[in-house]
Length: 258
Image (cartoon, rainbow, N blue to C red; front, top):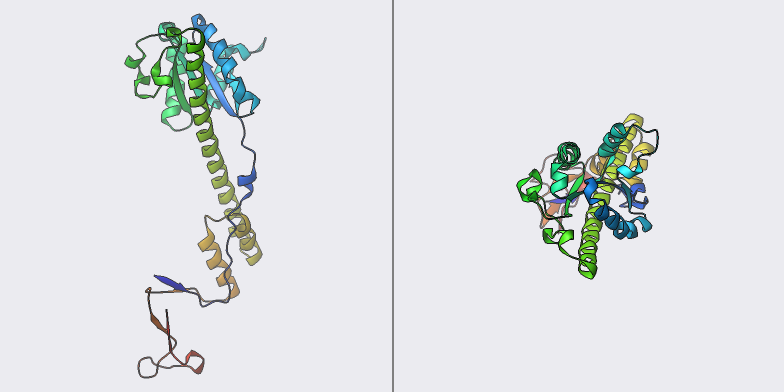
């Protein structure tokens, strides 16, 4: 179909919105581990430091709990705040009622609801493929960090960092898209409340989800007719005597339009 405008102009929304220019906020990472694997935690934090330097992530683990804080309450808060979970898996992790039964359960639930991303990292060889995490892709082909030493282990950590960086970028984009959506909806609600040409124009300057509705509202407020849709190809524009009734002079002469 081809749209033929019967109005002298149409307000076109810009493609750039305020949220596009906003600096992405760091992604909150929660690292869960067993005490027996603290050496792997420390090495992982060293390798992830590059992402902290780039201000793309903010890492939290239970070593961040301050003196005087209620540790269970603080862990619960961080479990709800996290955008991305890194689970250092081992037989000791699976053995831990808290790590496996509490932290992993909550991380997996939020992952399945689409609220966060969960990445299993194999610290030491274990039967993790028999856990609810089996369906998830582990970085570096699921190789255990404990299976390598020296430069080869560094290679595994590098692969993990790159996998985390990709997930961070994806989560940042998701957050940006959500922020843009909510900003658009808030601006549209405000435009509807104002119900004025200026209000809808302001909406169109930075948003576009409701562009067609905003343009229609502007036309109605201007007292102008809507657009008429006709079949694509050649068609006759105007009124033709003998074919149409009550032709007005300003509708003549009829002429072919492509």
